[in-house]
Length: 149
Image (cartoon, rainbow, N blue to C red; front, side, top):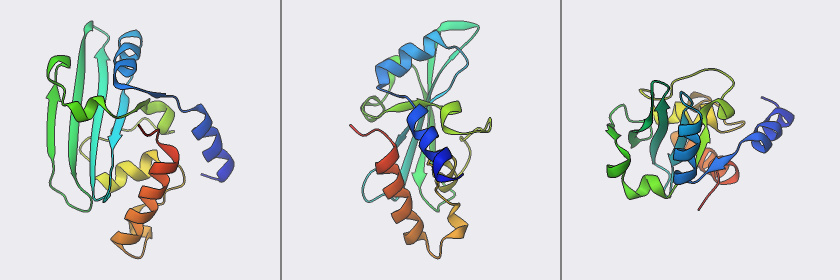
């Protein structure tokens, strides 16, 4: 992606608070709203997805995966709106299709791939000379692109 494409992507990406993403999900069944929690020291990535099934627009599902970067292990969970963790309510969300050109599923993948897939101009982790270099670049791009609280 060149810089112009990146700027277009940045300008068209709309970020939502948790409550706004829930409301938008109800209005747009089948659309995934992705939230990222990537905070200092930028070694762990938590991913939340808010979605509503077209067949049951009253039920909103919040899916979670998280783990350390460069580690194949991790955690996953699924929540009803009544039991969503507070940290999921404090981050911002964007429509997944606004973040990626392809129709991809980011769940079940490593955190480095998720960051590469959604952050403009971030190269794949294997194109960096070290994990530390990737983390530094990913955190810089995340802070510049993703809406912060």
